[in-house]
Length: 390
Image (tube, rainbow, N blue to C red; front, side, top):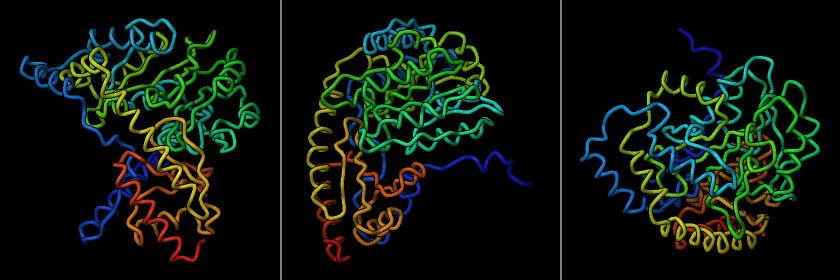
């Protein structure tokens, strides 16, 4: 029995592969600093945990509505309306176990053979995977370092055609930490407003923006009915293991996504959703403190990267990733990532794990303690010196 050919189109997340290698080295007694995994190193806020315990005690352990609990969808609609400067009701909100279903299900519902979908490269590998699984053609748009890792708008303009049915945006971005400027989003909106396509706006890092307010393309004239907003609780509230995400989308798409969900996941865990209400409606002190700490780490870590010979790192404006250009070392980025793990004990990712345009870069997650980040810089510096790179 052979696997279906569509399995050849599914990419894997490099972070988990590197984590396995790093754990194997640790099992051999080697010290490894983990800068490969995109996960906040903070605890879930206590009031959220307490609400989940209460929900379990109250019996929120059974099936719930496929689209999500009405109370949570109401809270999310109000939150998205407030933070994006738009007006959406709970009928537009679909709750899912994590953000990934809000990539997978709309793509399956909207894309088919002969269609094209534009996505950022380097970018989250799932974009390309799911576009291809849907049968559509994946069209990469390079993110340009000199433009803060925003789209190359000339390439974007040339890539649009009558077969383009979806455009994936991600801001703040994984892996670059870049934030697309408002003027670029306005330019993109002007180019697509009158086209028969949908924007999938991955805004999972929307609360992790430094020094500015998050801006969503959905807030621009004529774009709300063309945009799917993806967001969730994993990054903002350090709830990666809770598996709680959501999409806000045009009402004409909601029924299709619900069909996909009822045939796959049935529903999102009810007690997790109760905890989500507490996260959205409760104190935001922990979330704000986390952003402040990531900013402190960013400044120290990126500053240190830019002192390393052969490294050049743009200052990320969001998320918790640094994406330095390492071409100046003379070592291919894939080889450098492997050697940093095996020889220096620093786990990071080769930029090409996020697409061909990521070659020549490394991705570091600075979701780790300041002490470990400074030790990682020291280890990299010693490795470069030992390799004759000065």
